[in-house]
Length: 137
Length: 137
Image (cartoon, rainbow over all chains, first blue to last red; front, side, top):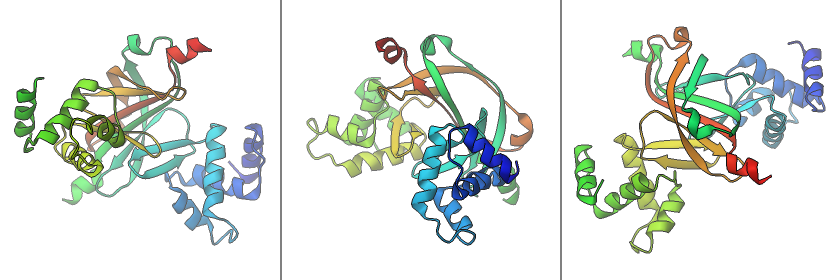
């Protein structure tokens, strides 16, 4: 998505496309690195010296409300964000800390319990060791 | 599981079965209410006036290391615990806050990405509105 399209995309989702919002959404949707607030702040600071951590945090909050990003709470005390809101899973390597996306074709749940429930969000987290870390041993 | 069996179960998993540990595991495995540290502390305090929040926290940490409980990080800033370590999902109602367990028969993931990865833990979180809250409207 080029910058003009990002601006249109934000507008379409009810978000006023300020430069900071566009840059933050661009970061998230092109890097695909599941960053924390601090990571986005540090990486964009040089380009936008007036950026604050609070702005990044509030922008994510707005994006979440408008459902154009999702929150990843795979581990205690660490919140990450993802512009990919289609159903997919996250694998976190407990050795190197890297988060990998993986596709999910199908989840078969016990129908009885969730009958007549409204499911608005689905998160699937796997934790373990990635191939690179297993090979390094 | 009666108390003697709980003690045996802890021993079998390499945990010295102190009274506090037994009581905390008993709470978790019989109440099935996915409590936070504070909840367990508040509920057990009357019965065990010498209990501290730190003891509850450290006991959970030990249980996690020994893999007899799992951690639920369904939402930012809220960690819950579950003595059911078999694969199952958690649904959190964003209205009443209640967490429901549901069974999972099958998860079909895209094999390519996780080929040769070691998956040690699987967490499935659904968020939405439960039947009771939908009916109340």
